[in-house]
Length: 221
Image (cartoon, rainbow, N blue to C red; front, side, top):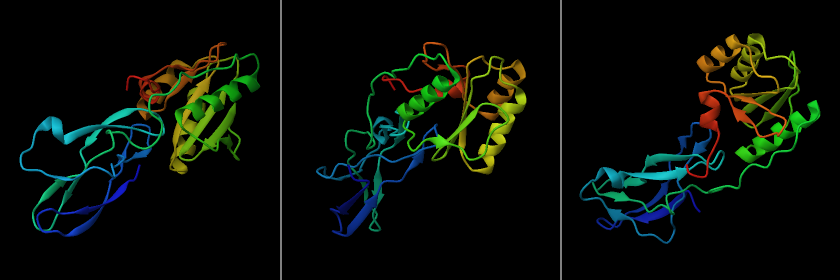
């Protein structure tokens, strides 16, 4: 569906090209509502709260968000409501459940993290050029992810190192661990907003803190 649409004002007959403004999802991806090319813009005469908002699903993480209904203000003073295509952005709607792979080795842990990130909507995932102090670091557009398959819990230093590197690259970050996290590492991740996941042998990543829970989409969003 298009994110821009030709619009004619019914009052003064001016021609406009409406571009749907993007808003940032909680995952960091820009989201714009898909517009209905077959719909007819309507003049807003009276406002109602329920009519001013639509649900737009993020194409990157699948999360449903409440965004302002698309509107166009004409110089003549007329305000038009622009029809959205079902209130959803272009991209995936309700998705199939994530299908994990059983984790038996450190390599399995990294592979499973890659599969999970792709399920979240991140593509072109590869190993980062810079090696972290421990584990394996992955990169995708706008994201740094670290997978730590060590037997011991992830340290505070490892969490802070990931965050500092992500900040330097203007990217979000996420951490996966087989053995969990030290208490001070969890506290620091909560403060910095870093999603923490544990990887059980079944392979299905378990969100360990609120940022990770917010990143995890559900088909009910």
